[in-house]
Amino acid sequence: MRSCYDSAHNKQHKTCVSNELNPLKPESGAGAPRIYTRAEHGISRANISEHALKVLYRLKDAGFRACLVGGGVRDLLLGREPKDFDVATDAHPEEVRSLFRNCRLIGRRFRLAHVFFGPEIIEVATFRAPHDSFVDDGDADGAAEALIEDGRIIRDNVYGTIEQDAWRRDFSINALYYDIRDFSVVDYTGGMDDLKQGVLRLIGDPEIRYREDPVRMLRAVRFATKLGFRLDEATESCLSRLGDLLLDVPPARLFDEVIKLFHAGCGLQTFEALRHHDLFGRMFPLTEEALSHEEEGFPITFVANALRNTDERIQSGKGVNPSFLYAVLLWEPVRHAARRFMEEGEAELPALQHAGGVILSRQARHILIPKRFALPMREIWELQPRFEQRRGARALRLLTHPRFRAAYDFYCLRARSGEALAEGCEWWTRLQEVDEAEQRRMVEVSGKKPRSRRRRRSRSKSSGNA
Image 1 (tube, rainbow, N blue to C red):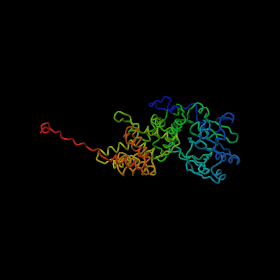
Image 2: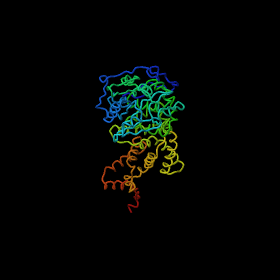
Image 3: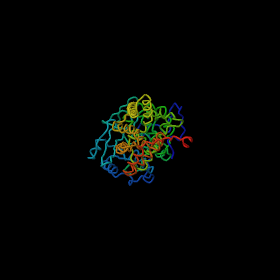
Image 4: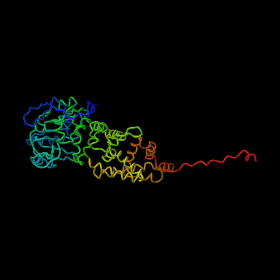
């Protein structure tokens, strides 16, 4: 599989490459779309959610144009199972709500309709028109207004045509429409060709698009890695130079974006690509600083090993938790800070507690981690010293701690990276596998101090012969 940084990348590149093959077309009627008939593409209604089809057909029967759009169409064309199905229509949000009793309107920046079918939500967006700048998706409120501040889209509720909607989306492969009227795929931006060639390309001038919404830089890395696509030259060339724009993104918004980056089953590749494009350090400067140094002549491998383990869990269908992810990403700066506090005289546990508070406070300037995730993170960190104490009832009580399993996995990842004793991980693994009697025996044996052998005085030959 190709990674998202297969193409040569020059970190000294100071200017964005002009995307001459992809001028943004703000005016309606700028070019006829390429229509792929049902016989020319592989999308089957059998692979589309029945609830999404219900929304599409009801909108069509009410006289509106309705299309599947975005990642759902892209994944269907690639033979992948879509994560969700989004609908685009010329019906306004209030008109959508009038057709569905199970509908709720959401958003301030980007007005959307959510149609609820039990646990499944079909998102319905009205075709958007371009304005002085272009945007793809977010949250909204209001009727027909656009607000731009310092090149960033603050509010976007300018409704338009399907063609206008296509040109204001972010990547060409996300601007393909599956039209329920005749089951065709409508392509205004060359997305089908990019899909066939395995290229991720921004629509329009990359610098303008990144300035409108800096999170698009993270989306570019995420999609390219997830799909095994390469970034085209214009899309890639700005990333390192414009990375500081991420500092202007609200820290609360970046929390969710990081989860999307590392919980897609290719977190390790994504991590490497973010570092390659100098983006990881813009979000986690303390971690990047820690990783830039070696310990005892060896690179720090804990984050990479942990992300590899997370990828394996996701690919095998096991659950993952944002608290564990963030505990991993911030462990190196926490560990280093705790070491400094211990050198200043603090005991190990108070030093870890102190370090956790300091690092979370500093990280909040870049990414704000909600308390419901920060508290479990701190528990994972603060339980680490207890895995070195393997004797008596205290060890058995640790097995019943609500955060034991996460802290144990964390400890064993540290052992795999050479930071904790592999012997300790093996001991705690065995303790969970044996019965209660064997558990008591194990902690008793661990609690016994080895008896020092007393040296016997040797008798002199003279005394022995007496």
